[in-house]
Image: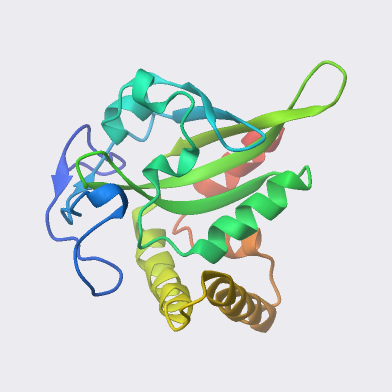
Amino acid sequence: MTDGHCGVLLYRFNVRPLVGGNNVAKRGVNLTGRERLFDEDEIIVSKTDLKGRITYANQVFCRVSQFSEDELLGQPHNIVRHRDMPRCVFKLLWDTIQSGKEIFAYVLNRAKSGDHYWVFAHVTPSYNTEGRMIGYHSSRRCPDRSALEKIKSVYRLLLTEEQKFSNPKEGISAATAKLNDLLQKQKISYEEFVFSLHATPSRVAEKERVLV
């Protein structure tokens, strides 16, 4: 793999799950531990309604996730949820966009085959001509590889906290408290934390371009 390139339909076989346990994903799909990669100039794009049901999926999304457009449309976006992705991060994401704000986040997704892929997501509310929120738009780029090593350790910590509780809501609440504690100690927001992980200022510049 060359510098600055995430690879197209290449694989990394040395990826282990964030936590232990039986290697079974939701819907009975076995997790392979194999990572799917895509080019850094490609963007995975999807749109959903207010309930999170997919209304649009571009071809990059279909190719990387291994789902056809017909399989994706009308389905909840969590069709690609990976069991090693902390639920508290999804709660933060949903709370943020439902309040009308945008969010940047690293997300671990599961492909149809049980492979996985990481993305750097930018999710924003969508509005109609009358200014009413009608859904959400998500653009996912190739993640910063150095940042992934740091975010994995944080997500592993949050996931371990969630799994201490048999009640999912209690687990999410406990993990959210731990995440907030980590952020408060550094005196930064989640978004500032995400961008602080990048090895080069180019990603911060990318954020600024997106926001213009």
